[in-house]
Length: 142
Ligand code: 5GP
Image 1 (cartoon, protein in one colour):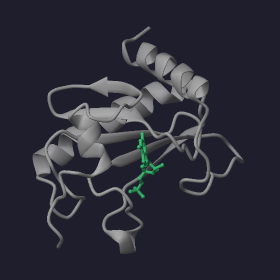
Image 2 (cartoon, rainbow, N blue to C red):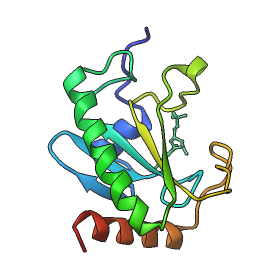
Image 3 (spheres, helix red, strand yellow):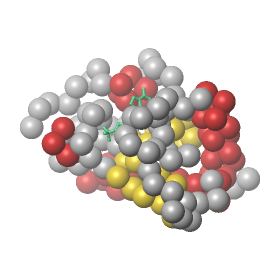
Image 4 (spheres, rainbow, N blue to C red):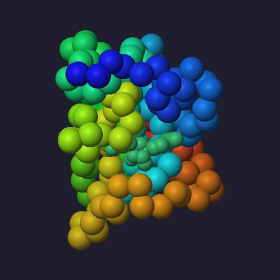
């Protein structure tokens, strides 16, 4: 498998070289909004440790990401009045991966509403700010 590339966009976000709409952070993970959401509140959860995808991530780092994905999913259910949640993780180009730092997509779902195609439109800044503020409040129990 190809080696991890420290210049991928999510590595730059982790190093603070590129902005993001952060919703959650702890010692092991960072969660931020997808700027081209396939559903309102679409969030990406990534490990702080470098990992290209599911195939090379250390099991403990994957466990931290899974725990954080559950936290985000629970908060997103109330924040976005969702009926359900879809998680997705793509590994390697053939698996649909575009950014090569492991991430889990957490997508709030509503009955009868299909996901938008991947990367179909960049969301309005105001919408992203509003989603982040509400999700952060829910994650903090507010
Ligand atoms: P995947 O690699 O699983 O196919 O998806 C990469 C995801 O990253 C896509 O959903 C895309 O919209 C998102 N994405 C691409 N560039 C950026 C970026 O600069 N910032 C954020 N927050 N998301 C991005």
